[in-house]
Image (tube, rainbow, N blue to C red):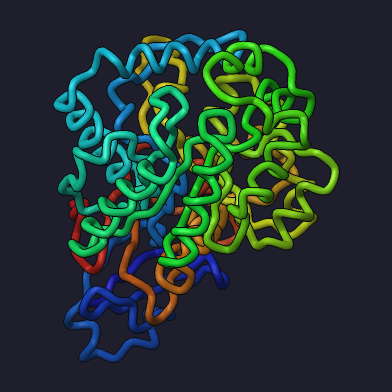
Length: 410
């Protein structure tokens, strides 16, 4: 099958006017100007018309289970207050509620152009769920409240990961955050993941409260959690350094949020080849400290984008928010006006693929990559194509995952 489009946007190379992409057995085999495809090839083509054809978006951090909590919470004054609210809200939900929320979130992502998602699974018992999406399930690990032995927690999660991977569902570990885990659990998760060649992701340095807890051993979060966990690991440096001591930082690790950096943290992340995922709309909801994009990018850290969950988005003008990577790109662009639109698009495609170990397989249109493609209505000139893509709103015109239509063209 050959897909023809007004503009093809490969991401890793310049856009192509009147371009085409050839797909065979779920893979991209050729990309180029339409005129270079022979008459014989053209007989098996689908003309998508006035669209921009680009790689499917890569959502590097999401909580699909929380989709049902969309717009339920107002922005909190303190991050720790929101943590208490969401723990309480989760406690009154049933497994059926979470399944419905998961499926609703997956549907939203499909409609708005995501083809690959890193999903944090707090309830591994509801997995896997059917979806055309490429889902990498990261099993959440905590243990502070339950007081279960870390080795038992990691072993149980590892068994579930093996069962998912045996059924061709990629999975890895997600120790929730430094404040909600123990150093031993972090070390065991890091060792097991490295031994098994699994990927790991963790919320880290998200809030000023967390940063104060680990650097100063004091503050609102420290006071709240000191009766629930052994806090002797606090007061020894930044949350990023805390993860480094546990052995988590590395090429198989993705750090989530990273809003608060100490001197040297950006360089440490870069040396360890650890990627960072930023969730712009969630960041705005909490009014976190400014995301240190320049410090991280200058250090050479791979920065990508995610949606986080709908539990950390505010309903505006009675409009319930949806999971939408284009909305994340627009939100990022508004706060970082000096970052070119093409760079922002890379953060939602190629960078995310690299951070999740999918380099050459997703996030760009190149021969050999998976045929994960989306089409957006677009008539802009080639010179304006990145800006047009960045400001797309609404559903995509079509979506192809592994060479099959997830959203069929009209």
